[in-house]
Length: 229
Image (cartoon, helix red, strand yellow):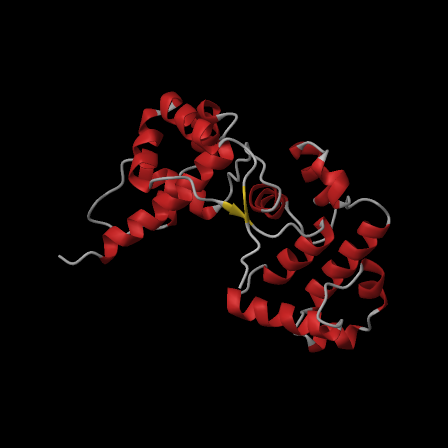
């Protein structure tokens, strides 16, 4: 089975060298984690990618995947076109497992795709990160975090900092903050947005790569917790 994922277009080796030189403590994390192995998800249109993002919001991955599969099945195993989604009766969407709020969000996504607010794939590739965030957050149910994930994992943009992301804040705390060893990690130990933004100035223009390593810091911490003794 073909995965369909592809490597980023930017120079990941250069990014790692630059980050290590700019921030030796981040460099230590990079050394522990190993090579940068991010692969981009299949690059659907912005409409298709955001449709999936809305479905997956606040749901366990398996539950969201089942809803997405039922929705695509009702449209002939394909992502629906925006006009078809707008024309679909509420009963069909609700039968797939969509909540009322997600149904409204998907209809707004379809409408804003048709009126040009949501760009095409060709258009979005030519837009700056800031333009993409400004446009896509006009869609009901789409916030900056969702757009940041699209920029990093779908479009492969190298300098995105999802500063509100729980994993980024947790990974930053593990990497840069002094945490009490006798106490389990809790939300009070998360790094603040201001802390991350201040240090992340060193990471430009590779903040996506730095963020990826902060997520890996959470993985490393989890493995340590599972070690015997």
